[in-house]
Structures are given as structure tokens and as C-alpha cells.
Image (cartoon, rainbow, N blue to C red; front, side, top):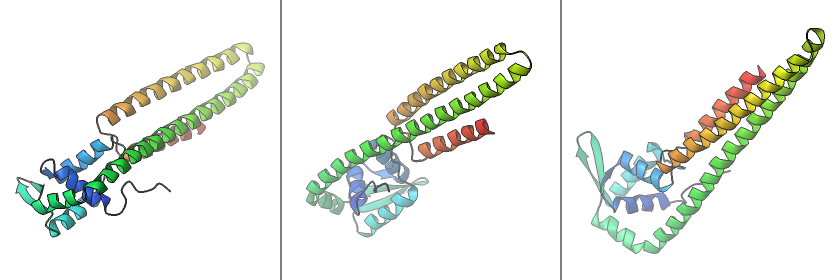
Length: 201
């Protein structure tokens, strides 16, 4: 089971530390958190807004309306709490760094495992195709059919290698932009599973 990104009560303090830099609306806070995690963790609105409400109830933040947006700002009491828990915040920063590494490793492992599985399935499908071609070739034309299957296998493997290369580039780009959300690995796994199903079918 994957451990939580933040220990109990730590996200609340971390939100205060972000708001100490400048006032923000909820979506900006979510983006700021995602950026600090390199896109490997992006909290949901259902995670952030209840904590902001609690911080407001405790008079640690205030909120105001800017058009359609609600802007949150840290209060003097909030800054005082940050100052009083400064050493604890340092520990949270270290935990965040560890969480970023762990989440990045999980993304990398999931993508690598999915690609290995896809490669194995493609190879198995190609072997079956070669076996079928050999049987058909014996009855009709023979060796040329085997050469055609081998050529197709090489082409399939080149396509797979190029796909892996491009996906790695895209993932790294999204991490750099702070845009690699929690759903990316799940979506990648689902799409690759569909490819496998198509090949098997």
C-alpha cells in the first residue's frame, strides 16, 4: 500500500507556508502544490478546500472574493503559527522531497512494467503469426511467407521502441511543466491494456 504523501496535519501547515508567499485562490494552491511535487502529486479540490475552511475557522487565513474567485490570504495568527512550528515545517519539506522521489519511482516503474508487458505480448503475437505463416507457406508458397512475418516483427519492434522513446519524452516534459497528474499512470496503463487486448483479439 502506498503511504500518504502528507502525514496527519502536515498538509494544513504546508498550505500556510505556501500562502505566506502571497494570497492565492484554491486552484492556484493546487497548482503550487503540484509544482512543488514536480507534477507527481496533484491534490484534488476535495482535499484542499476542507482544509482551507478549517484554517479560516481557526482565523489562520481569511478569504475574499475577486470576481468569481475566492482568494485566501494568511493572517498574522497564521504567520505566528508558521514561526512557532518552523522546525516542524523543515521536516515536512524533507518529507515532501522523499515523497517526490518515491512518486517519481512509482511512475517510472509503472511505465517500465507496462512497456515490458506490451513488448512481451507483441513478441508472443509475432511468434504466433510466424507459426501460422509457416503452416500456410508449406501449403501454398513456402519460405517467402516466413520472410514477410519476420519483416513485420522487426517493424513492430521498431514502432514499439519509437513509442517508448516518445512517451518518455512526453512524461519528462510534463514533469518539467508541473503537469503530470495522478491520473497519468492510470490512463497510460488503461490505454496499453487496450492495445494488448486488440493484439490478442
